Image 1 (cartoon, one colour):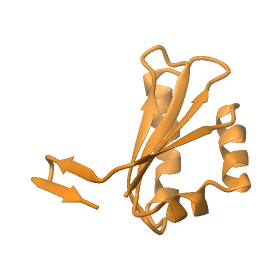
Image 2 (cartoon, one colour; image 1 turned 90 degrees about the vertical axis):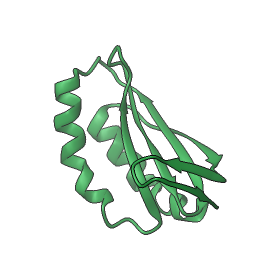
Image 3 (spheres, helix red, strand yellow; image 1 turned 90 degrees about the horizontal axis):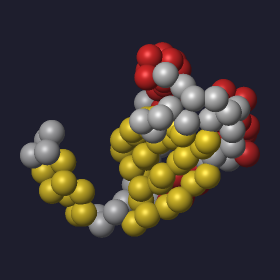
Image 4 (tube, one colour; image 1 turned 45 degrees about the vertical axis):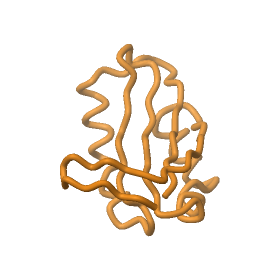
Length: 103
């Protein structure tokens, strides 16, 4: 499994309420993405940085989403382009399901 950390510096701080509204409006587009296991939306405590943590089945699945078109969508939606950092995730502890998952 692969975890992708996506971050972008916002041109102006975003409130928690505005982030909730904005993130919720884009969430449905991620429900049927092939290979995406889970996505967490992120907003820094000071509201200046946003992004997401994505858990993927493979890096190839991740790269199919992070196209130039997707990066343009992020830029237009948030006013900043994303940076993407990939991490191998060989073990996941899921307390919600009570599982320890290994790749």
